[in-house]
Amino acid sequence: MSLVELKNLTKTFGGLLAVNDVSFSVEEGSIVGLIGPNGAGKTTVFNLITGNYIPDTGEAIFDGKDVVGMQTHRIVNLGIARTFQTIRLFKSLNALENVLSGCHCRMKSGVFASMFRTPAQRAEEKRVLEKAMSELEFVGLKDQWDTQADSLSYGKQRLLEIARALATEPKFIILDEPAGGMNDQETQELIELIKAIRERGITVLLIEHDMSLVMKICEHLIVLEYGAVIAEGDPETIKNDPRVIEAYLGADDDLL
Amino acid sequence: MIKKQDILCLAGAAVFACAPLVLDAYWTDVLNNIGLYAILALSLNIILGQCGLFQMGHAAFFAVGAYTSAILNTMFDIPLLWTMPLAGILAGLFGLIVARPIIHLRGDYLLIVTIGIVEIIRIALINDVGGLTGGANGIFGIDRPMLFGLKIKRPYQFFYLIWGFCAVTIFLFHRLENSRFGRALNYIKDDDVAAEGSGIDISRYKLIAFVIGAFWAGMVGTIFAGKMKIISPESFSFWESVLLFTIVILGGMGSIRGVLLGAFLIIGLPELFRDFASARMLVFGAAMIAMMIFRTQGLLPPLPRKYDVSRFFSKAEGEQS
Image (cartoon, rainbow over all chains, first blue to last red; front, side, top):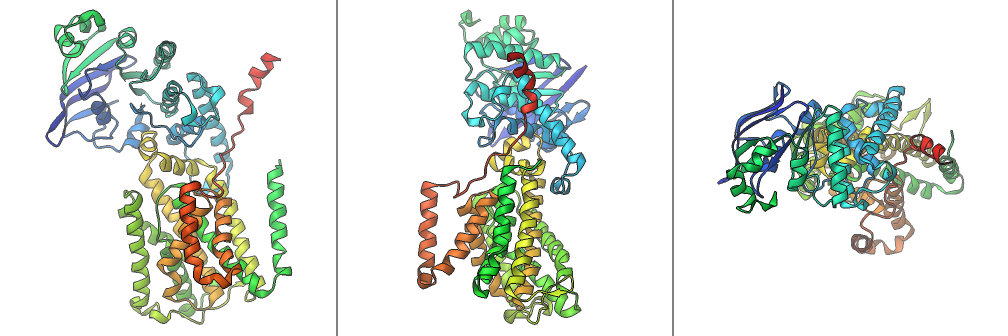
């Protein structure tokens, strides 16, 4: 069953056609990669799914609901979480508080409950603290829980973003270049982490430039060029697709 | 479980509570003014300090509260302190109505609109809207507040009313700061796109911050009306908003202890240096410039929140030993 279905999404910025009639679907429980040269519109597609942009035409069906035009926080509530290509952590806060922000949408206590510290509010705080610590442990940052976010290394900041996204209890997680800025060892650990995320029953969609990573973990690939889907299939098919080789990888297929 | 820090706070508060015993009426009144500004600045701190919304029209909410109480008290003879919740609610409602259309504005754009709001209120009051506000003369003959049958009129009595209210404010706002709500405001201040992407309804939280700030400022308006007995539009000028803004920025955005220190410095110091009153603006200006260069986070920036996570590590330590 497909969890996410994009139908004929189109988005223009002024005269620029950023996303041109893109349709694809993501099977529940799979790891799908979205690849393409720089400026192909990958991140724009992400932003259309997460409500940061509103498409000119088309539908984005998630779990049976069209999320086009919904506010981002509502979409997060439905179960779509994301990380950012350019890291957007809460820099002045520590790692734990960054993850707690993800727990926010699964909490209920309001202003009055907080002012008067009702038993329900205290129980909830305890529960989310546990949740946030377990997510930090999941990505391997438990020991750095009180490190300020911008003091973490680049690779760890990426992991922290993933932990924050996981704390929203998503069904579908969108990772925008998670290996950017990571060294080889960190990338290996990331591969294990992405597999572990899938083990939790969360569907993964990722944009990535590191081809070896994409080829290793994605079951299905979608290739974008100039905002349009030019090829789709399993890594083996994509690797040998002449259009992809020409458009994305250049004529030199040694890269693979 | 009582912490050492709490004991120090309580001891400090107890010593401070004895201040009227040693100070004369004049200096007690200075402390009262500091207290009023401290509560106002604490309410502004929720909007400006914690949520990072540049709000320079806080005197407007203060004015709505003060005039609500004054009108209800002088026209309908409702005891002054009874009007306090209503003053807060009307100010909060006013905050909701004016903030709703401008809540998506950022930084200096919001600042300019809020300056407009405080001016509109002041001019509306001068123009005697609906024949209720008494025009430029304001409203006089406001009753003194009555608390448990005791009429509060002397400075030391006001001292306990104002600083008692301030203590309650600090207590509640401290709890608010260390909650889901307080954290959400900090996320919005740090990066509103990431906050929205983490599932926080940022417009809603910005609005709630405005409403709480306005509600509290409105309640301070009631006490102010009772203390002055006369209120007029001059008391709610743009200048008052600037003072409150300065208190929060100078003391430390988002820091309760910083805001308290700011109130003592901005309101208290000019009293100590009366002889140089004409140079006051010069000193303020120079101090702000120096702050912007050397200590942008304010004199006492907020401390990191504390989380008790020891229980998550006890197992690992057990294995080591």
